[in-house]
Image 1 (cartoon, helix red, strand yellow):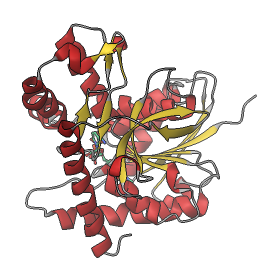
Image 2 (image 1 turned 180 degrees about the vertical axis):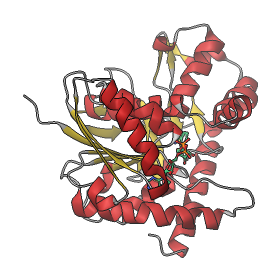
Image 3 (image 1 turned 30 degrees about the vertical axis):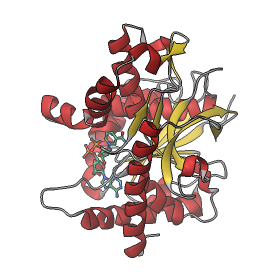
Length: 328
Ligand code: NAI
């Protein structure tokens, strides 16, 4: 029998946590033959609700679920962790400046990064979901010098999936016909969903759409502002779709991308496509054998260049701000 994989989820009592844990326990994160042990990290006020969720997980009698630990201590939560999903974060509240937001999140992601550094398993893979995801991932990574930097990733898969869905609607194709879509940059309103290399049933998506006004005025803003539109409609932020994207991100990272396709992940830049080295920015990546690689050699047209640069500039500013705060 296989040894269970230790999966740590922070913010386990939150709404994404509630949508995520049952899917992990049912085998959708890693594979239908991989047993898992769950570690739930919450702040003290969240522990009771996390215990309630653990009771429900028990009540599902998932064959792959080999145990659940609940704690408010990051050193316990990340001990032996193979996969860490960092979901809990400090949201921006009214009147909060960016510096305050970054500082509050530094107080969460710096100690968690250190706990990962000191206690996680050697093969640890980290996905940061909690916003500002890219920069929170940078903070955690900087606090974990003994862990290879590339193990720290940030989630842009929800943006990727949103863009696929919008493009499928526009072209009348099914989502499974859409390949090679890319989200570049930051998981924020400046992100750039790129269809110039995407394919719809094997044909170039930008050529099929052939409508730059739709791209600039409809597609890009719809994808980039989808989170706000969900809040407006639902009265709460995206939860099930965010959990779904987290499942997709880790599943793809571990199990690979399909031949001829790629996905989008926020990852430490190696300088590709003019993105300064070390920034955690979204790129087109292929995954194989538990590792990812940036897709190389794509031609970046002027339309794309300006948008990638604008989002990367925002990441530079966030990095400089957390550097100024001594968080990295
Ligand atoms: P939520 O507020 O329902 O849950 C957050 C949970 O985190 C709470 O239970 C809270 O007690 C816990 N928490 C706070 N600080 C913690 C700490 N230091 N350690 C452990 N747990 C802690 O929020 P929700 O809706 O679940 O969203 C979580 C995060 O995901 C937010 O930052 C949100 O902005 C982000 N998000 C990111 C998306 C992406 O595409 N990257 C998409 C949607 C949401």
